[in-house]
Image (cartoon, rainbow, N blue to C red; front, side):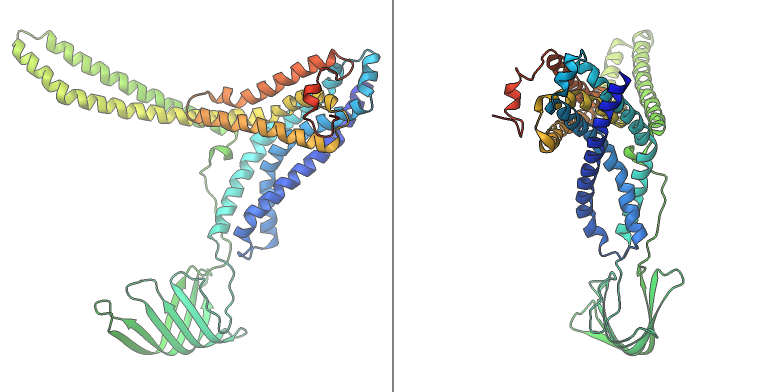
Amino acid sequence: MRILWKYVIKELVGPFLFGLAVITFVLLMDFILDVLNRIINKGLPAPVVLEVFALSLAWMLALSIPMAALIAALMGYGRLSADSEVIAFKACGVSLINLVIPGLLLGCILAAGLIWFNDQVLPESNHRARLLMSDITRKKPTWNLEENIFLDYFDGYYILVKEVDNESSKIGDVTIFEHKDPKAPRTITADHGDIEFSADGSRLIMNLFDGEIHEPDPENPERYQRVNFKKQTLTIEGSSTELVRSSSGARGDREMPIRMMIEENRKFTIRADSAQVRIDSLIRDELNELVSIEFDKDKRSRQGIKLLKQARASKSTKDLLSKIDYQSRNIKTYRRQVNSRSVEIHKKFSIPVACIAFILIGAPLGVMTRKGGMATSIGLSLLFFIIYWAFLIGGEELADRMFLSGALAMWLPNIIIGGAGILLIYHVNRKTTVEGFDFIKRFLPGSKK
């Protein structure tokens, strides 16, 4: 039996690595097309660009590994079925269930590794990737001062320089249009000047000589003033093209390990319980006051009690209901936060366990497709992964709206696909051929009609 297990696992490892490479490559190409426009004009050094892709590779692997497990099951068991090895094994008393057990063992190993990966590596990678992309977005694009070219990289300024000496940073025949204040735009001209940066590189300092400042009168647009100067220093903020790396303690749900999310849920649960205690206290205090009024009839007439109750109904009761409504909204918000994090906690387990569910569904389908080949395997993998992901996204949406618990929302796709796989294994195992499944084979690519 050990030799059989090694043989089956060997048949699965090759297609798994192939599927992992193909799916990761497709996801990487899609990511490149999405991110390229945001970083291409930023003048980023090669190590920073590689860091962006390396950090993003974590979430790609979290998706591609389960899908590669499905491709491995379809291709591996499909190859065994196409070469009639499944029938040969059955003739020797080895059932399909015995053939599936090595695949399930491989799926368990993948699931265990992916659970650790999703808890320890993926949150930190997501956090660092978000911070890095935010820093890149804030980074100014690279710029060069060129002759007779309008420079518009700086907020509030358009700069035109007709003479540039890059070696000495000297400039000549300078025209600057300043429009920081739309009501009072200025035009600055200078015969010559020089440029430098501040010590921290965040400000551009332009020393201008022998020039004029033209500025319209905000009160009377038809009038403007002209000021001649011998020297004028202009400081422009935000001119740095350096990538400033930031750090932040704030993390989103997908940037937290399980331990951190459980602690956050505990805090929100305590807040929800405290809000419920406040509601109970408000109701109890109001009832105590009403009861004390009823039994104090010797000091108040019945008419006085009636008027007091009417006044209470018109004012105090409204205040009480308003306070209860406020606390109820807080409870709903806290519980929604708890459910949202519960979704992320269970997702860290359910997606890795999908490797096992995909082995269960992929093994009998691979036997049924027989000579479908690689195209059939990849096509079926995409189909079932889309179905799985649709269930996962739909369940997450229902959980966020408090229609389902986070656990049920995340585990339901595995239950459905895994359960369907178990039924298919049971039925295929009872037959020596795939007869009886022609209605399925008609819709599989590469199968005979």
